[in-house]
Image (cartoon, rainbow, N blue to C red; front, side, top):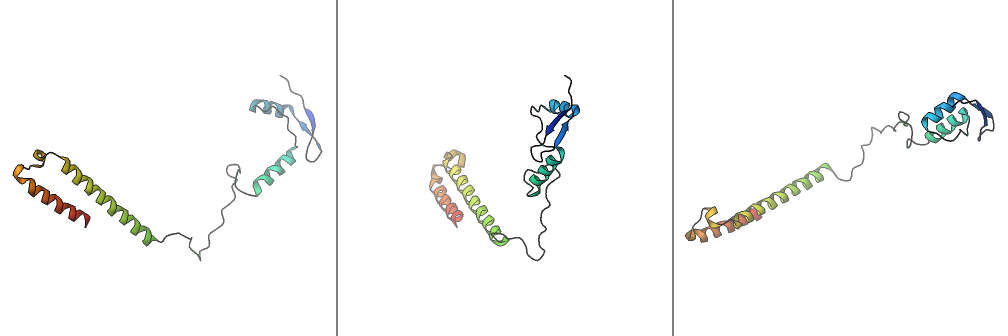
Length: 138
């Protein structure tokens, strides 16, 4: 398909600009179906206006620089490091207790022959289990 230069009026400034055959081929290769409405200078002005207010939606490499943090004041935090470390230690202890209780429950569920006990040692095994539970809880 052969393309010919077209004269189009800009919708922003009203000036007439040329939509060249090369530009038309480029538009077709990109799959664009509409002709441009704005001249090159108005398109560039619109882009710079759109990206000047914030870095949201800015093209790659065009992000606005982040403001420098003041050296006089540290960033705010909700919790101090000491509070967070105490919380982590408390969780670890709780998990350790849960694990110990699970092990005791599994051992209690085993048959007596697997525990190494005999019928005469049943009472001794029960007392030992009670002692273990008291130690775990404390």
